[in-house]
Length: 273
Image 1 (spheres, rainbow, N blue to C red):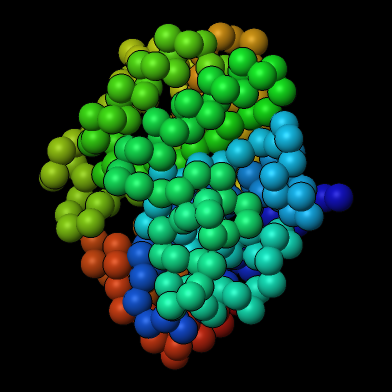
Image 2: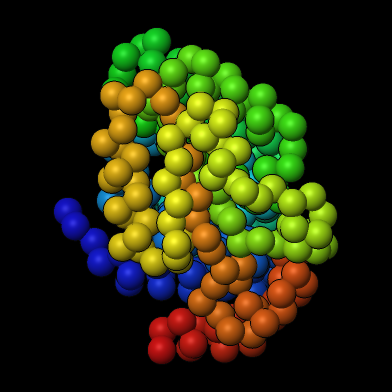
Protein backbone atom coordinates (compact mmCIF):
# COMPACT_ATOMS: atom_id res chain seq x y z
CA UNK A 1 0.00 0.00 0.00
CA UNK A 2 1.32 3.45 -0.92
CA UNK A 3 0.68 6.59 1.11
CA UNK A 4 0.68 10.28 0.32
CA UNK A 5 3.61 11.19 2.55
CA UNK A 6 2.83 14.90 2.49
CA UNK A 7 -0.66 14.22 3.84
CA UNK A 8 0.73 11.74 6.35
CA UNK A 9 3.14 14.43 7.54
CA UNK A 10 0.24 16.81 8.05
CA UNK A 11 -1.64 14.18 10.05
CA UNK A 12 1.36 13.49 12.27
CA UNK A 13 2.01 17.19 12.77
CA UNK A 14 -1.63 17.84 13.71
CA UNK A 15 -1.66 14.96 16.17
CA UNK A 16 1.52 16.24 17.82
CA UNK A 17 -0.18 19.58 18.31
CA UNK A 18 -3.34 17.94 19.63
CA UNK A 19 -1.66 15.79 22.28
CA UNK A 20 0.79 18.44 23.49
CA UNK A 21 -1.94 21.07 23.45
CA UNK A 22 -4.15 18.78 25.52
CA UNK A 23 -1.35 18.27 28.04
CA UNK A 24 -0.46 21.96 27.96
CA UNK A 25 3.30 21.67 27.67
CA UNK A 26 5.84 19.65 25.74
CA UNK A 27 8.94 19.41 23.58
CA UNK A 28 7.16 20.85 20.60
CA UNK A 29 10.07 22.21 18.55
CA UNK A 30 12.06 19.00 18.22
CA UNK A 31 8.91 16.95 17.65
CA UNK A 32 7.81 19.02 14.67
CA UNK A 33 11.27 19.00 13.07
CA UNK A 34 11.41 15.20 12.60
CA UNK A 35 7.90 14.67 11.19
CA UNK A 36 8.93 14.04 7.59
CA UNK A 37 11.55 11.49 8.61
CA UNK A 38 8.94 9.62 10.63
CA UNK A 39 6.47 9.71 7.75
CA UNK A 40 9.04 8.23 5.36
CA UNK A 41 10.14 5.53 7.81
CA UNK A 42 6.79 4.32 9.08
CA UNK A 43 4.79 4.73 5.88
CA UNK A 44 7.32 3.84 3.18
CA UNK A 45 10.72 2.51 4.19
CA UNK A 46 10.33 0.18 7.16
CA UNK A 47 9.39 -3.49 7.13
CA UNK A 48 6.92 -3.48 10.06
CA UNK A 49 3.52 -4.88 11.00
CA UNK A 50 1.37 -2.80 13.38
CA UNK A 51 -0.71 -5.92 14.10
CA UNK A 52 2.44 -7.77 15.16
CA UNK A 53 4.76 -5.20 16.77
CA UNK A 54 7.21 -7.92 17.92
CA UNK A 55 7.53 -9.49 14.45
CA UNK A 56 10.83 -11.29 14.04
CA UNK A 57 13.16 -9.67 11.53
CA UNK A 58 11.30 -6.36 11.58
CA UNK A 59 13.05 -3.09 10.94
CA UNK A 60 13.47 -1.00 14.07
CA UNK A 61 13.49 2.70 14.85
CA UNK A 62 15.15 4.09 17.98
CA UNK A 63 14.51 7.72 18.86
CA UNK A 64 17.66 8.54 20.80
CA UNK A 65 16.52 12.16 21.22
CA UNK A 66 13.86 10.78 23.51
CA UNK A 67 12.11 14.08 24.19
CA UNK A 68 10.60 13.73 20.70
CA UNK A 69 8.49 10.84 21.95
CA UNK A 70 5.17 12.57 21.16
CA UNK A 71 6.17 12.73 17.48
CA UNK A 72 6.88 9.00 17.45
CA UNK A 73 3.55 8.30 19.16
CA UNK A 74 1.71 10.35 16.56
CA UNK A 75 3.40 8.35 13.80
CA UNK A 76 2.59 5.04 15.50
CA UNK A 77 -1.05 5.99 16.04
CA UNK A 78 -1.43 7.02 12.41
CA UNK A 79 0.18 3.74 11.33
CA UNK A 80 -2.32 1.75 13.39
CA UNK A 81 -0.30 0.57 16.40
CA UNK A 82 -2.93 1.95 18.79
CA UNK A 83 -6.02 4.13 18.69
CA UNK A 84 -5.50 7.86 18.23
CA UNK A 85 -7.61 8.54 21.33
CA UNK A 86 -4.65 7.35 23.42
CA UNK A 87 -2.66 10.37 22.28
CA UNK A 88 -4.75 12.47 24.68
CA UNK A 89 -3.26 10.52 27.59
CA UNK A 90 0.27 11.78 26.85
CA UNK A 91 2.28 11.93 30.08
CA UNK A 92 -0.81 11.58 32.29
CA UNK A 93 -0.76 9.08 35.17
CA UNK A 94 -1.36 5.51 34.03
CA UNK A 95 -0.66 6.33 30.38
CA UNK A 96 1.01 4.04 27.89
CA UNK A 97 2.56 7.17 26.38
CA UNK A 98 5.10 8.79 28.71
CA UNK A 99 6.78 11.95 27.42
CA UNK A 100 9.94 9.93 26.69
CA UNK A 101 9.57 6.56 24.93
CA UNK A 102 9.30 3.36 27.00
CA UNK A 103 9.45 0.01 25.19
CA UNK A 104 7.66 -1.71 28.08
CA UNK A 105 4.62 0.55 27.78
CA UNK A 106 4.04 1.41 24.13
CA UNK A 107 3.41 -0.95 21.19
CA UNK A 108 5.88 -0.20 18.42
CA UNK A 109 8.60 1.33 20.60
CA UNK A 110 11.78 -0.70 20.13
CA UNK A 111 14.00 0.95 22.75
CA UNK A 112 13.36 2.99 25.87
CA UNK A 113 14.77 6.52 25.78
CA UNK A 114 17.47 7.29 28.31
CA UNK A 115 20.02 10.03 28.81
CA UNK A 116 21.02 11.63 25.54
CA UNK A 117 23.36 9.36 23.62
CA UNK A 118 22.20 6.11 25.20
CA UNK A 119 19.58 5.33 22.59
CA UNK A 120 22.16 5.61 19.84
CA UNK A 121 24.45 3.13 21.60
CA UNK A 122 21.52 0.74 22.01
CA UNK A 123 20.70 1.11 18.32
CA UNK A 124 24.26 0.14 17.42
CA UNK A 125 23.97 -2.93 19.62
CA UNK A 126 20.64 -3.87 18.04
CA UNK A 127 22.20 -3.47 14.59
CA UNK A 128 25.03 -5.80 15.60
CA UNK A 129 22.55 -8.39 16.91
CA UNK A 130 20.57 -8.15 13.68
CA UNK A 131 23.73 -8.64 11.67
CA UNK A 132 24.70 -11.71 13.71
CA UNK A 133 21.19 -13.12 13.29
CA UNK A 134 21.33 -12.32 9.57
CA UNK A 135 17.63 -11.44 9.75
CA UNK A 136 17.75 -8.83 6.97
CA UNK A 137 16.48 -6.02 9.17
CA UNK A 138 17.52 -2.40 8.89
CA UNK A 139 18.01 -0.51 12.16
CA UNK A 140 17.24 3.21 12.13
CA UNK A 141 18.04 5.79 14.80
CA UNK A 142 17.40 9.50 15.28
CA UNK A 143 19.81 11.73 17.18
CA UNK A 144 19.61 15.42 17.89
CA UNK A 145 22.24 17.99 17.04
CA UNK A 146 22.55 19.04 20.68
CA UNK A 147 22.71 15.35 21.58
CA UNK A 148 25.62 15.04 19.17
CA UNK A 149 27.76 16.94 21.68
CA UNK A 150 27.63 13.83 23.89
CA UNK A 151 30.75 11.67 23.88
CA UNK A 152 28.63 8.52 23.90
CA UNK A 153 27.44 9.34 20.38
CA UNK A 154 30.98 9.16 19.09
CA UNK A 155 31.87 6.01 21.03
CA UNK A 156 28.89 4.32 19.38
CA UNK A 157 29.89 5.79 16.02
CA UNK A 158 33.34 4.18 16.30
CA UNK A 159 31.82 0.88 17.36
CA UNK A 160 29.32 0.79 14.48
CA UNK A 161 32.01 1.54 11.92
CA UNK A 162 34.46 -0.97 13.38
CA UNK A 163 31.79 -3.70 13.22
CA UNK A 164 30.86 -2.73 9.64
CA UNK A 165 27.20 -2.27 10.52
CA UNK A 166 25.91 -1.42 7.06
CA UNK A 167 22.42 -2.39 8.25
CA UNK A 168 22.48 0.70 10.50
CA UNK A 169 21.03 3.97 9.14
CA UNK A 170 20.94 6.99 11.42
CA UNK A 171 19.60 10.52 11.13
CA UNK A 172 20.72 13.76 12.72
CA UNK A 173 17.93 16.27 13.28
CA UNK A 174 20.14 19.26 12.46
CA UNK A 175 17.79 22.08 13.42
CA UNK A 176 20.70 24.11 14.86
CA UNK A 177 19.08 24.66 18.28
CA UNK A 178 19.17 22.89 21.62
CA UNK A 179 17.58 23.33 25.01
CA UNK A 180 18.72 26.86 25.79
CA UNK A 181 20.74 28.26 22.89
CA UNK A 182 21.94 27.70 19.36
CA UNK A 183 24.13 24.63 18.96
CA UNK A 184 26.95 26.72 17.51
CA UNK A 185 27.03 28.86 20.66
CA UNK A 186 27.06 25.95 23.09
CA UNK A 187 29.51 23.50 21.50
CA UNK A 188 29.59 23.71 17.72
CA UNK A 189 29.39 20.36 15.92
CA UNK A 190 30.14 21.73 12.44
CA UNK A 191 31.36 20.52 10.02
CA UNK A 192 29.10 17.63 10.94
CA UNK A 193 29.36 15.62 7.72
CA UNK A 194 33.15 15.64 7.85
CA UNK A 195 33.09 14.31 11.40
CA UNK A 196 30.92 11.33 10.48
CA UNK A 197 33.05 10.57 7.44
CA UNK A 198 36.13 10.65 9.65
CA UNK A 199 34.48 8.10 11.92
CA UNK A 200 34.06 5.73 8.98
CA UNK A 201 30.44 6.34 8.04
CA UNK A 202 28.74 6.98 4.73
CA UNK A 203 27.19 10.44 4.87
CA UNK A 204 24.16 11.79 3.03
CA UNK A 205 23.32 15.45 3.58
CA UNK A 206 19.72 16.50 2.95
CA UNK A 207 19.32 20.17 2.14
CA UNK A 208 15.72 20.28 3.36
CA UNK A 209 15.02 17.62 5.97
CA UNK A 210 11.40 18.74 6.13
CA UNK A 211 10.75 17.77 2.52
CA UNK A 212 9.42 14.21 2.30
CA UNK A 213 10.69 13.73 -1.24
CA UNK A 214 14.25 14.64 -0.26
CA UNK A 215 14.10 12.48 2.86
CA UNK A 216 12.66 9.55 0.92
CA UNK A 217 15.39 9.80 -1.69
CA UNK A 218 18.06 9.89 1.03
CA UNK A 219 16.69 6.77 2.74
CA UNK A 220 16.58 4.90 -0.58
CA UNK A 221 20.17 5.96 -1.26
CA UNK A 222 21.22 4.80 2.21
CA UNK A 223 19.56 1.40 1.76
CA UNK A 224 21.44 1.07 -1.52
CA UNK A 225 24.70 1.34 0.42
CA UNK A 226 24.07 -1.86 2.37
CA UNK A 227 27.00 -3.58 0.67
CA UNK A 228 29.41 -0.74 1.50
CA UNK A 229 30.52 -2.24 4.80
CA UNK A 230 29.73 1.05 6.53
CA UNK A 231 26.83 2.47 8.53
CA UNK A 232 25.18 5.55 7.06
CA UNK A 233 24.38 8.90 8.64
CA UNK A 234 21.68 11.04 7.00
CA UNK A 235 22.03 14.65 8.09
CA UNK A 236 18.66 16.38 7.92
CA UNK A 237 18.83 20.15 7.79
CA UNK A 238 15.55 20.92 9.50
CA UNK A 239 13.63 23.78 11.08
CA UNK A 240 12.84 23.48 14.77
CA UNK A 241 9.07 23.82 15.11
CA UNK A 242 8.62 23.28 11.37
CA UNK A 243 5.14 23.74 9.95
CA UNK A 244 3.72 26.08 12.57
CA UNK A 245 4.79 29.70 12.10
CA UNK A 246 4.31 30.92 15.67
CA UNK A 247 6.31 27.98 17.02
CA UNK A 248 9.10 28.51 14.49
CA UNK A 249 9.20 32.18 15.52
CA UNK A 250 9.76 31.21 19.16
CA UNK A 251 13.26 30.09 18.22
CA UNK A 252 15.21 28.47 21.05
CA UNK A 253 12.23 28.91 23.39
CA UNK A 254 10.27 26.26 21.48
CA UNK A 255 12.38 23.40 22.86
CA UNK A 256 9.89 22.82 25.68
CA UNK A 257 6.99 25.24 25.58
CA UNK A 258 3.56 25.85 27.03
CA UNK A 259 0.99 25.04 24.33
CA UNK A 260 -2.71 25.58 25.00
CA UNK A 261 -5.57 23.82 23.25
CA UNK A 262 -6.31 27.11 21.51
CA UNK A 263 -2.70 27.26 20.32
CA UNK A 264 -3.08 23.72 19.01
CA UNK A 265 -6.27 24.57 17.13
CA UNK A 266 -4.61 27.60 15.56
CA UNK A 267 -1.62 25.48 14.56
CA UNK A 268 -3.81 22.77 13.03
CA UNK A 269 -5.68 25.33 10.95
CA UNK A 270 -2.32 26.54 9.58
CA UNK A 271 -1.07 22.98 8.92
CA UNK A 272 -4.23 22.02 7.09
CA UNK A 273 -4.08 25.25 5.11
